[in-house]
Length: 342
Ligand SMILES: NC(=O)c1ccc[n+]([C@@H]2O[C@H](COP(=O)([O-])OP(=O)(O)OC[C@H]3O[C@@H](n4cnc5c(N)ncnc54)[C@H](OP(=O)(O)O)[C@@H]3O)[C@@H](O)[C@H]2O)c1
Image (cartoon, rainbow, N blue to C red; front, side):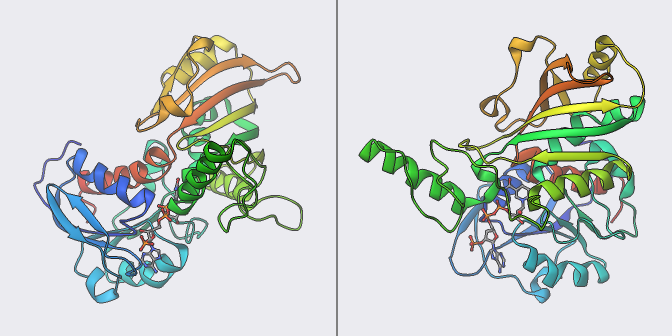
């Protein structure tokens, strides 16, 4: 991060003890974000300790009074918590970066992936949303192609990691794996976290279904991607699947463009796409294990589709906890700091 001024920002992290929160705290330190004072909040039900720059802090329940002491507040907890505090803080001039889905579709609130639409962040916008972690891979990987060749239709199948559903989901996954190791039988455990067993299994349900049979995750992909790309006429359909993977969401995408192209042209566009590492050799395809704790979206297996002209297929993987959540929030904060927006 390159800055000219030496200003430091007082930071609050709401949800610091969660999966995204812990990564966010780690990345603030690793990327040397100019932090002055820092405070950490959780549900207040546990005295969870958080380490930051060799100091130990105890999380507490958030209050408006406490949060108002900050210049910048990261919300990485639950929609209801963002709903309770974020707009009030933004009205008081405090910069809020919200990783929950609470405000993502609000017309007045920018939904930002810095590689794509950082310029939507302005001095007057004090509340900024980060998008859903599943669409992140497609949004970043295909943006340059969309700009040059206008993507008309996108069809997506997802293979989503357990960590996308938070720390309770990881606990559930571990419990089911232990059951298998102990009994040698596939688990068929009922849980509050998932609709089916997740270990040695997968299921085509992320969120709840609407009256037309689309899941809430499938609706988020469609609505949020159209907003970020400013592409109201783009057609997007998807099937979202939870897979027994710890970390990293994978996407299989079919992409139909308006303009003609050659595979060479698509390759060249992918190679110069910001935030993307593209592997030309199909045997170099990335997996969730390759993508874990990496900053870039990864893609490979580019090929012309056999079913439709002007359509190609691509395999995309990204770390849902880094680029899909914590890293994107930190990049938003870095953009604000570099451009002196607060
Ligand atoms: N996981 C992902 O890949 C991902 C990606 C993009 C966006 N998101 C979004 O990011 C948010 C956090 O996700 P996560 O996966 O980190 O969830 P998580 O592991 O379940 O963590 C939730 C965090 O919220 C805190 N919390 C719960 N109730 C609270 C309250 N009333 N006041 C303050 N803090 C409260 C929890 O504190 P305790 O420790 O006290 O329970 C914990 O720190 C969610 O909105 C999620 O949709 C997640």
